[in-house]
Image (cartoon, rainbow, N blue to C red; front, top):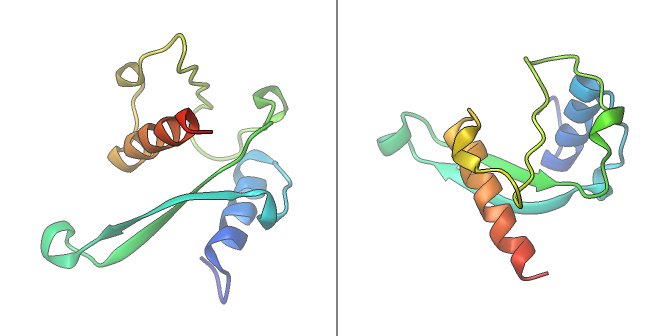
Length: 101
């Protein structure tokens, strides 16, 4: 986060910087906050995870990173995609949450 940004403002800014996706911070839905503890993870920190719906991946412009991967939970297996642990856990939590919607 930069300056006095809150997590959703920072996420909206990052989406615009990295994918040219212009949204309002209120478009983001908070999924979960993951906490790291110094004694286990080497640092105290938190990761706020948000999600968006209704995004057309064809309209995204990759400005940072290597690629945009589109995951289809009906036809793909999550283990076939390289990603960080927090990303994998976030997707699993998201899929579980969407079962109840």
